[in-house]
Image 1: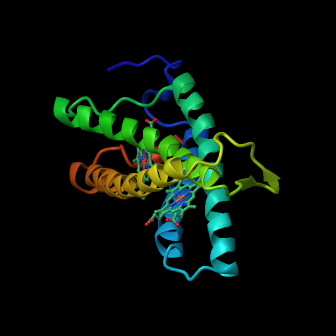
Image 2: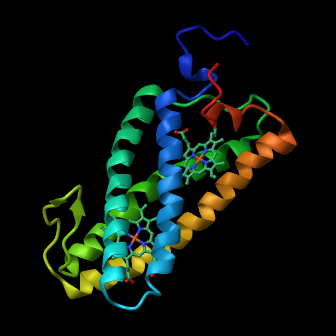
Length: 185
Ligand code: HEM
Ligand code: HEM
């Protein structure tokens, strides 16, 4: 099928989309690992510093998610191979929408959990303004949400990575390649 040259996003992701995807993938997977392990540390300076690092990296994810969603809205994404069955198309769209949602819900639940617990949130040495006042019930609620959402993120990212590998190894199409940094077609 002929595509006009102006449909730049028809066959590949832009360099910006790729940079954002892989930077955020590394950050989110690191945050899942840091988050699940830090809660087992004894209360003290080390735990405090690691939790603070977790919070700062998490806020960075939120900032990048805003940029990424705006970029996606402006530039779109390449179409799936024409032979993709309707159900798989739907699964890919729903999965990607879920991942976008989690890129916001994860950091926001963490931010509200911290501030409702009376703990300040920093980014690059600055203290972020409070979105919510200290509130025990809200702290407990968002703490539970943060944990459930973290599980959902782990499961969805696992399925997502498995789907990408299936495209590459089983279906042998371009779907993984067009998200890879070195592919500069
Ligand atoms: C994509 C972003 C994030 C991911 C993937 C993530 C992931 C996690 C995970 C897996 C845990 C362990 C949950 C548990 O087993 O109890 C956790 C805990 C925690 N997260 Fe995040 N997090 C993110 C962002 C944030 C942000 C932005 C903040 C605050 C500004 C934050 C604050 C916390 C705190 C305070 C805990 C400890 C909760 C406790 O002691 O039970 N997180 N996070
Ligand atoms: C090792 C892990 C990962 C692999 C192998 C991977 C691979 C890919 C590939 C190949 C695509 C392009 C799909 C297509 O063209 O239709 C893609 C898109 C996407 N990935 Fe990942 N990814 C990984 C991790 C993540 C993580 C951690 C997130 C965020 C939580 C994420 C979120 C997304 C989203 C939202 C899209 C859709 C982009 C768009 O069309 O706007 N990925 N990923």
